Length: 251
Image (tube, rainbow, N blue to C red; front, side, top):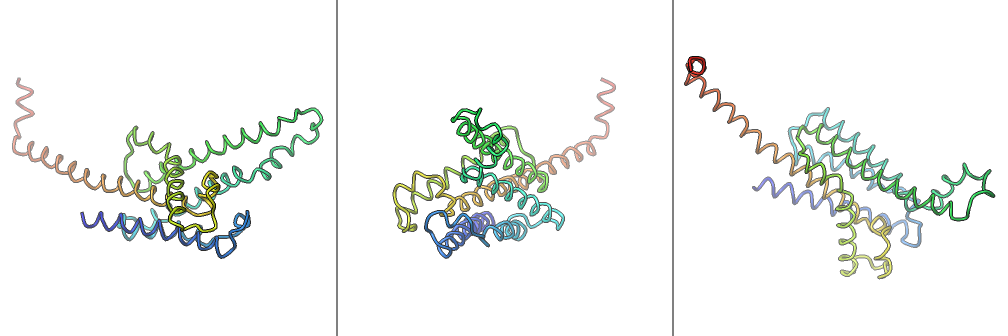
């Protein structure tokens, strides 16, 4: 019980530290407008590394070096993929340029609403891709950490981006009312881009992924001894009853 408490508290502290570190970097670079979108953030580089260290030294100490490398590589690739897709979703000028460039020779033949429809469709596709990438990542984590996922757990995991998004949104609203974001105004609360600008999305992402791993690894540790004990009981039963198989044949 004490070990589980330490794991959860350390995960919460890591999530809060990641959020505060990123938010501090945004303030250092400058809050105004979209200036923050073009900056490099050290927090985004260190979070996967720190998360992996937490996994090895606190959450799942039995991890091998090979598992750690696989986990870290998988997380970095997922990070990069989601980062690119999020940029496509919120940077509509870039998205419009990339989508419309192939159709420039036929611009006169295309209706005015064509580009708008194309952009909306691309946003929808990018959101679906984020769901799929995060789901595939969790399936990889399952294989790397050697635990099983039931069908209903896979269905729940498929919608993980929703839980992360909603938690980030609620956290942002609460922290705004606690005056943690002095440069925000109440109208910013309706714009989803501010969960990225404030960094509450980092808090919710790290927290949910960590809780998922803690739940599955602790569940596996509980069930494995039971299975082992059951197999021992069966073995002892057959040893104590060497004629049981013969009794079935004679009957």
